[in-house]
Length: 254
Image 1 (tube, rainbow, N blue to C red):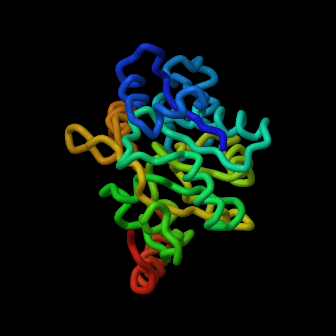
Image 2 (image 1 turned 45 degrees about the vertical axis):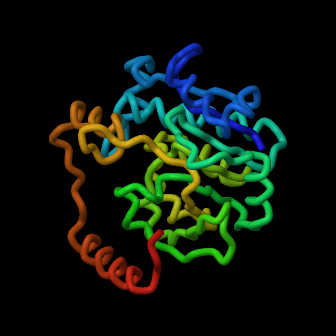
Image 3 (image 1 turned 135 degrees about the horizontal axis):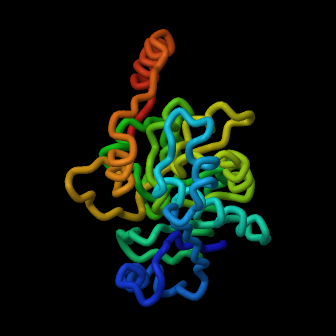
């Protein structure tokens, strides 16, 4: 399994030291490939092409940098022959020690549908409470695994810890030909065949300071686009609300 650390930090940064001080990551430090793109360093012309042109909501430099970092990791993964890749952002926190080789074997034993993304953290956070689906019979290190219904892909956020298979990596490379936010997965539900999103809770994220909803990127968005609102078709909104109410009755939350 290919291992990636998404970070713009350079050794000997305190943030990287804290990350690799955790046993789960320390034992595999030499295996990690680091990918990091600073959105603020993207030339203005390229930023407009990648983050603004043709989008209902422009990406901030931080959002663009995050997406390009993950995208670089997907592309690197596809150059090799590994079956799976695992990705961590540098603020990921282990809940306990996990042997990443054992994690790979356990995921393989789950026999998840081809073309999958398995979120390893984020489903427990407040902004993912609306995510619904059906629980798999098997668990991962005693944690339940939610098979997310495509209708709720838009509600799953956070990319600080997750796994993909090769098919999903290629799907995401194609998906981000025009970069989206790295955790903006709503439109995956419109692809044929539909990719599979699963979620469990093995890794934690530090508390958000100041009561923000997602991260510093949200604060950045408020500074860049404080008055931006996306118009929603009223009929679509009513239909979406109706279907969502029905699904909430039959599906489960994490």
